[in-house]
Structure formats: C-alpha cells, structure tokens
Image 1 (cartoon, rainbow, N blue to C red):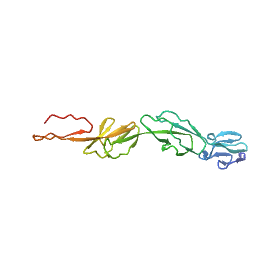
Image 2: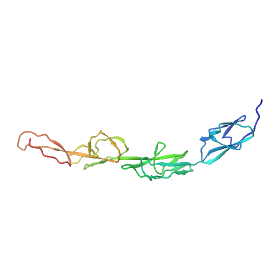
Image 3: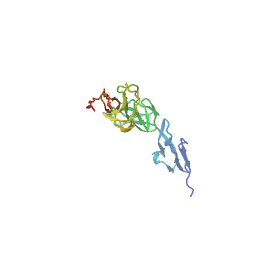
Length: 239
C-alpha cells in the first residue's frame, strides 16, 4: 500500500530536513547566537528538542522554531576563601569579570579568576555559551630580604602547597661578609633545597664572618671559625 502523502511546511528550512513524511531535526544546539532554540512546536504539541529526533506525521503539519532569549548564570566559587558573591544572570554574549569580593585565606592573596581552565583578571571580558562557575585563585608570594646586603631579588608567585626550590643568592654581601645560606621560617636552608610554600613567605639572607686567631708572639695555631652575623659568639679557650 502506498503510504499517504502529507504536507509538511517548514517555517525555517535551516532547522529541519524532510524525507517523505519523516521530519528530521538537525543538530541545532550549536546555533547559539543572541537567541537560542528552546523547543519546537510539532502538530500543535510543544515537543522538547531532546525528544524530537525523527518524527512521522499523520496529518498536514507546520514545523516551527520557538525562540527564547539565552540566559547564562554566572556563579562564583570562593575556592578556600570566605564570604560570598551573588550569582548573576546574564543575557549578553559577553560578561566582564568583577573585582573579587571574597576574603582571602590567611597568608595568601587574590591572583585572578579561573575560567574554564584559564586565568583571567577582573575587567576581562569572557564569552558566555552556558551556565558557568568562576573560581577565585589564591597564591602565595615568596619574597627575599637582603638582611643588610644590597641589591634586589624579585619575588616569586607560587600556589599554596607547591614545592619551591630555593635559588642562589642574588644580593651583594655587606663588607667582608660571606653568604652563608637562607633563613626560612627560622630554619637555615641552602640554595637548591626544596621547601613547601603554604603562605606568603619571606626568605632572608644569612651572612657570615670569619673569626681568626693570632698567637701574638706565641706559637701554634688555632683554626678560624665562621660565625653568623648577628649571632652571639663564645670565645674559645686558648689553643
């Protein structure tokens, strides 16, 4: 038996293809401009896009797109910080990132926003294609203190919990002092040692001086000793 022929009218031919009496929807989820397709009216019945793949008709029908303005919800994640930031419903295709209003975790500072794996700054414009969660990025600053020396060493930015390798000294030693190492949180360290950074950290240069001994007419020798500048030194017995 020859199947009945029915008239299928498409109000927008981009949206569907017709083969006989079968309506096939194209992948129109990708057609997001300032408006996006929400649902399709099919045979006077509103059918959600996900449900309408291939549909046979039994009467004359008109397939039409129903358009709804696209709204994206932008939410904010403190990511270890405290406080809150209200979500925003955005109808535009772009959104300008706001200033941070979260309170930073102790010992860290706000570094920027993480947006789909990328680091962005307040004032940057991002493209919106869906609901999105924007997370605060907190970092720690490693600063260097010459501790009486001269010159400068630029601070470095690391993530909390990151392993950090102490650099060589870049300061100029004062007077005849020598570089003895770094002091980190009250502990003596050497260049090349790896430390864990959990918060803003100051690395201070340790300087040393050589204490030598003169017999002053006597005989024999006493080995010189290296003394950390600023530390008290107990004079030894005569050797």
